[in-house]
Length: 212
Image 1: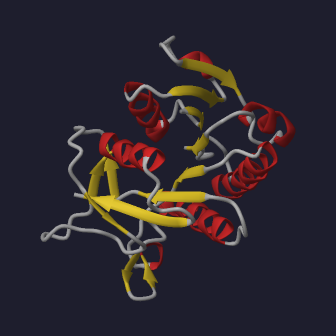
Image 2: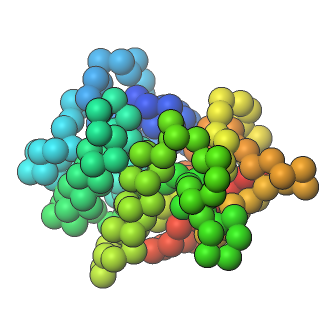
């Protein structure tokens, strides 16, 4: 496929880029600093600004799918900047008539009990609250879309560098944890699940999650 990947130089974006290229897809990588990406076969890297909708729309033209790993973590007001960026990405995808939008979500909006989301539990780390709230509101934006073919993949509570095993469990809106209560996934396996979804859609207009 011809994929446009927004946020290709970030933590999760880099894993998605590697997985997509290793599977033979052509990737147009959009980033604020595309010079950080080394030249690779089937890779084009371009500078982007998600706050410029018209320019972003032009960069999405001809894509078979758009993957968004946009985070806004480098900005002062992470939540507001992220939500503005997501709104612009949605608008650009629709204007460019890209068939699908796959979005990196957060674990904070996953339920740990009926009606109780992880973000609203005591002890949720304050350092991650703004980005988690932004991701939760982004999910609400997607769910309000009448026609957009979107999918959001929320990671386990802990996502970190590790191994690509290809062995994990998938879930819906509830946080997955093992028998010991650990909720974890490697960024490499997160990328496997996202590109699996790209290749064989199973969660159209849904959010899903994964964990070991």
